[in-house]
Structure formats: C-alpha cells, structure tokens
Length: 477
Image (cartoon, rainbow, N blue to C red; front, top):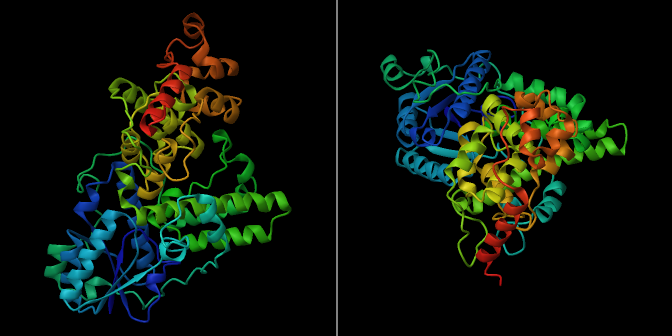
C-alpha cells in the first residue's frame, strides 16, 4: 500500500499521482508552517475543496484521512501505522514548499519509506523549458514560443472502487483518535486559527470546477480574446482558485482548449482560444521563475544600483485597501476584492499600478494585502504580477509607462457598468462624470455623488514623481 499526500491537487480525476498499481490511502495534512501564510478566503476555499474531495473518495469506497502537524513527523508515523511502503505527491515550487518536501523526503528515508514525486500542477516542469545557458526565461515571449510547441500530456483516469483504502480499515482506533480527523467533520476556520472571511468566497470542489470549465468551453472561450479585459462582460473562466488548489487538473483544462480550438467556427474564435492558452502559459512562466528564484516573493527580481525610495504612506495605503482613493476603477476593484475574494485581472493590474506608481508604496504591501484577501492567491502569480506592475520583475513594462487609472476606466469600463456595481455612491452618476471624476471640481463632485471621495492624489504629478524615483534607483542622470 502507498500513501498519497494531497497538497495542491485536491481532486481524484486527472491526478497522475493516483495512477499506480498499488492501493492508495489518501491524506491531507494541515501544516502549521503553511497555515501561517494562509488567510481566511484561501483557507475557506481549501476547506470547501477538502469536503468535496472527501466525497469523491467516499464514492469510490475510500476515505480522505485528515491530519494536523509537521508533515515530516506525521507522514513517517502514518506510514508505519498502516505499513505503507511509499508516499506519493505532486511537486510544488515555492521556497517554503521545496524546504518542506526536502524535510519530508529525508524523514521518510530515515523511516525506510520510499518517495515518488509526480508532475500534476503544471503542464511543463521547470526542467523542460530553459534557455541555452541552462538558467530560466525572464522574457515571456521566449518562454511562450517553447511552451506552446511542446507536447502536452493528456488527462489520466481517476482511481476506481477498490483502489482507494479507507483508513479506518488500516489504522487502529487509538491512532485515529489521537492523530487525525479520519471520518469526523472537517475542522472549521476557527479550529485552524482563522476568522470568517469578510468576502463571499466562491464555492470550491471538483464538480464546481468542471461546471465552470464546461460553461467556459461552451461559449465564453470564443469571446475571451476580445472581452477578457472588460470587467463588466464576465468573460473570464473564474478557474484561478481551482487551478491554485488543483480541484481541476491543468491537463483537463488544456484538453478542453484543444476541443474548443477544433470546433471553433472561424479563425477569430481560434485566436480567442489561443489568448486563453497564453494565460495558462503565463501561470507556468511565473511558476518557473519562482522555482529558479524563490526570493522573488520578498526581493525585487531586477537589481537596481540604488534602492527604490518607496514612500511610507499609511493613509494612502488604507484608502487603497478600502476602495476610497477617488479613482473609480481602482476603488471598484478593491471593493470587489473585499466582497468576493476575487478581482478581475485587468482591474488587478490597474489597482496594483496605482499603489506602486501613483502612491509609490512598496509592492510588497500590495502583495501582502492580495495574499490576505484573494481566494485564488498563488505565490508565483502573486509575486510575478505585483513585480510586473511595479516594474521590478520579469518582463515588466518600462518604469516610465504608468497606467492612467482614469483612462483605463474609460477604455475598459466605457459605460461605467462595473464601477456602478461595486460603488453604490456612483450608481446614479452620469457615465462621463465617472470617467472625469479625478478632474472634476469639488462643487461638481459634491453635486453628483456627495458620499464618494475626491481623488487622494493628482495622477499627473504622481506619475512624474514615480518616474523620478525609478530614475534615481537606476542611477540615471
């Protein structure tokens, strides 16, 4: 018998680590070291996903074992208790995950238990895409050329009844009582040390993920290329938290893009499918960067001769968090974050650029806030996206290209529909007033929406200040 250690693969379908010939006892370990970096929306989604995973195993005559503690202690103990000869898992790529897996591997080796790692999170592992010098790509376009041309693995079948072990048949009652939540209720957020999230986190689980994918594949993927930047058009897949926790396999998602491309009615529809595939590639690009440079979570990817003089602006930072900056598109996104634990991707970028350029607040402050509020927080994508917005990361826009939050709103929310949904103070405001809000005089603003704030900064002035700060860091002039 072997143990399968679930981490970011909370599914039984299309899980390469569940395809062996041996019987499998599945286990998930609530690791305090990992939970220390968690937040209510993420842990809420996780618990929902675990509940779904448990039901998937029960349908197959098994049971998901839940344990708490340091995996390097729990897993050797569990392997001895059920006489397992190996532990399997799917690879992860953050520095914390790598250190954890190294410690678990060493502990299992000391216990004479084998380890087998699988590739179940990405379509292509970091070793498979490298430039000629053997390092890693820092420019997405070069990465994309290789990534899109590599053959993709197909989804694998789920284990069937008889393949999965019920831990109550393999472990004595004393071990179960002392070390696990084998068949009892899932731990609550409070049990794990978290408050309830303020946002209404979207449902988790394999059935939910596959329903989302089916709906996206049926229609939305064919307009994704044109509509994905417009937050009011609901043209994204909403699969990001499911890919983060693996409630749907990325091979399954890729297979659906192949089917969609094959049945596309015209070249424009196929190009739209390709636009979505590029987003899958961006996800893997950032995972490869994190694997090579785990310090990108805390350090600038790009080196500067001088330090960037970020500003200490607690009032501005709080206004940004609260959606009270007086820039409607930014504020709508930050309020969507609080309400749903999710933000539309275009608005994420605009809000991140506002914090790092208009307010000149360190990108790490924004990364930490998104980490605490997003249900789909992913270390690689979070760090990659924030450093992109701050012009400190891989393939980032030049420091002198600064998003204008007002013109971004006018372009991508032309009718003000998205803004009105999340900012009730502007629901009755004319569309032109929403787009011109930062430039209106105080009298007009009070007449139109007395409860919505005036802009906290002048974008033109702050743009020049941001450029000067980066030129100083670069040693220009």
